[in-house]
Image (cartoon, rainbow, N blue to C red; front, side, top):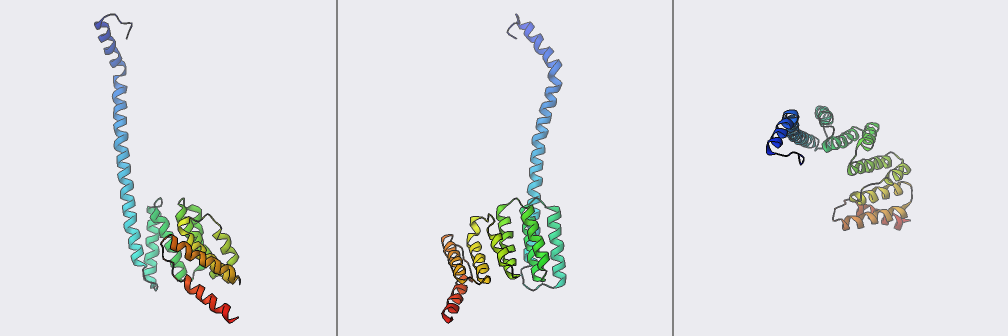
Length: 219
């Protein structure tokens, strides 16, 4: 443009540039606008999906609130778990639904089924907190099925600090199952200490410590 000598030449140059490039420019602007609208539509879709998953998960929680569920309720709950995991697979609610599915399996004494679901959560989840919950529940399951060594190995996984009190509590259970009351006591005391520091209630641990003291006194 600096080499053009007159305003007429500049005007002619602008006209030629627009004739050659105007269509692609308009197309580019249109594509950019479509991209913005498309992104907003995608965000709205994601928000709607998350909201729908939240509603379905809350239905599941309400449905399974009781400890004793009849067969019809269990079947409906499992169907709802499938709906959430199939239609909202990328949401947190799908992973929480799987954790609840494992609890339902335990209520039916399906230990292998519960273990399989929890292991699937560990392998598929990208959320450390959810993985940590699954590791803790697998460790509790290991203690309950006379595999305390396996429980201790699971408790060595990178469990989030937010669940450190629960981690120490289950470690105490594992040591107690191994016949190591001293290490059990230390782990339970640590659990209470962490729970107090984090201002989170941890029920039943003090009773286990009291029972341990009574047993030691009787020896």
